[in-house]
Length: 98
Length: 147
Image (cartoon, rainbow over the protein chains, first blue to last red):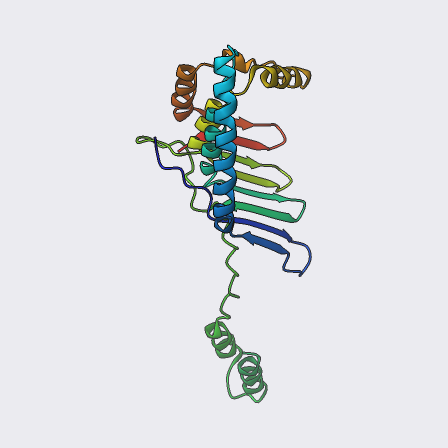
């Protein structure tokens, strides 16, 4: 399994081509949320593991919540490198996930 | 530049030079072309123009060019697609039924319950050789490829 590295930063730029305004740029350092996210994921994993175990012992047909949480985290990490550029009706929108 | 031309015309008026000489001098001034401002580099300027011939593609590109000069460029990591498809196989059955119903209501009758892990790998492999190129009569162009 490849290393899971959450996004470092998210950059969103919105600009109006027709006006002289510089537009709006939001550069969000996602990595500052990593410690909080790590704590949250650890907590969720513990709960999901207990639920899975309980479902397994009770004969539940679905007991893969732990895997679901891990896969969700993996999905989040794979968003790195995503880029969207939209130029429509004089409006420019750029979204980058680093 | 205007001063040079004026001086030549003055010399012509004073009879110091002939009209042919004046014309030659004016031509020799040769007004340089106005510097054309370079267009702002598009964020997608460095993107590949088509599917990669060899190697492992890492991104899926979606490019839309409309006749109204609207453009859409999207670059999605293929790993994200793989992770997303794998996630669908882990969604609880109750939630998956709701997803399938919602998608069917939207006109997309895809049953994700039938999506197996081996199918996911096959889908990803197929994407690597895929290229969709749609050109409408309006001049709109949509391209989807992996590189």
